[in-house]
Length: 94
Image (tube, rainbow, N blue to C red; front, side):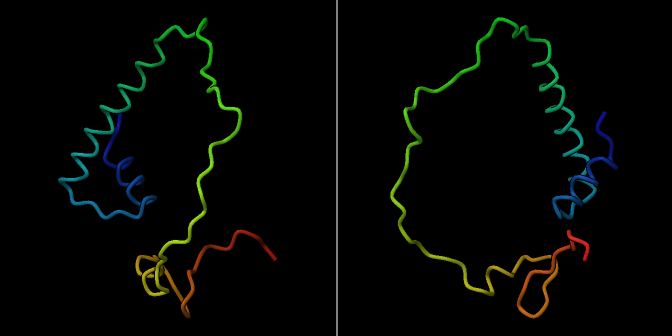
């Protein structure tokens, strides 16, 4: 069900570098997770009403300023950067 290539593709999307041992571990774990989730499809939920919380409004919290990352810290894990900015793929053609 979950093969090595599938795990490597997910790792690539998440920008993770995995060892061969980790690939095998995650292959097994992801397979187990998917088997468990498939069990949920077997439940009869036809007469089950959806849960709707009894909130009259969205609970809010005070907006208090906190610490922030320095410019260098923000860019530290960027896969690609140039001139102090993140480089991202073009999404709008000109």
